[in-house]
Image 1 (cartoon, helix red, strand yellow):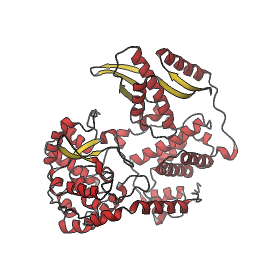
Image 2 (cartoon, rainbow, N blue to C red):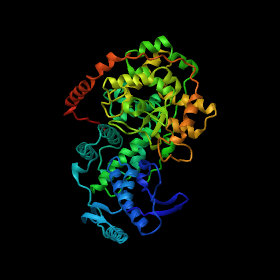
Image 3 (tube, rainbow, N blue to C red):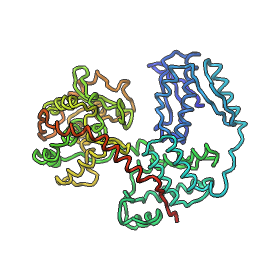
Image 4 (cartoon, rainbow, N blue to C red):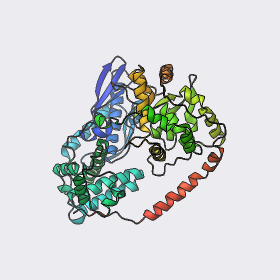
Length: 515
């Protein structure tokens, strides 16, 4: 179990746990620090022990590839204290059921059992021989386990992609024979994997190594660091799974030096120029493109005046639009089905800028509420589980390209840079910009409450300083009535299309020629 370290701070007593080396990228920190809200004593030690057990279980699930809300698990453990641990498997294989930690003495006994068992634990069984120990076979078993466990389709697809590349680069060898050097080779080679290789005719029918060789010859750009980090995360989960199943003794990725998560997640791109904004919102062109599609009409305007990410806007529900402390705005959070946030800093309440109120945004909210829709933009699907913003991004990118804004990679995200850049030039503080856009402010301090009502006037004032230089079109009540009526039929249509795709894909097996 992770060992707690108590920290006496002006705000009260905190407890700190060290994150294992192999999980630091996934967790995003070397330590987990949480408040105890208790004075130092037996109660605090008991609460910390419960949190340590909960954290140990969370780490185990992360190694299996599960998504875990560590803060939520720790808070539940802290508030419960008389923790029902459930099933505990010691390192030597002994299993205890219905374990409960009620007192500090219980906690000491459980820790003692874990430590003694770890010393006496037998080494893992030797890897299986023959076909069962091969990378190709264990890849199939691992992916089947992910599907059986109900993992999101995106998780299985991304894991298959990373493991397919690994197989193609290092060859179909025993999983126990894969070393850190094989992983270094993998990352050296995958740095040349071309973007969208499977969709490009020039790479059709080629195996992994041939594609990489051609990519090197053509000078294809290196994948984003975030993409390389995802490969590391998926492969680490796979080898932790192998270790748990006693097929290997250690995860060979542990010795690799990797780029910091914060550096890898630094957002790139540039803001729109004023000329580009003028082209995007040229009245006749914009209205012709957006007049029959509520999401086309509103998402670009919302992005322009909030800097919100495209998926954050596309996933909004009608009930996300509220008035807080007299300020109309919208919640960006995981409150309803299908909603996602990028980081904890992304949780926020965004005031509606005056230009959006002036052109009738709240009138649209009334219209869609009357139409009986739960989602603000019901024409945007989430068929692949990757979020509601995918279609919005594609449609907007195609539109601005026709308007002469055709720089590679420039799209909805440029609104985010535009707002942040212009507010900074207008003298708005970094912390206020961060509260509006959902960035973590420098220093890593997050507000205790994501709405943060006392700072709402600051954000309203800040947004009033943003000058877009364009005139937004005005919404007319009932403008999208026909489209909103039609949208009621879309969920059934999407479900039928998804079922058809699944039937078509069933039975197909992806093959890779490693050599």
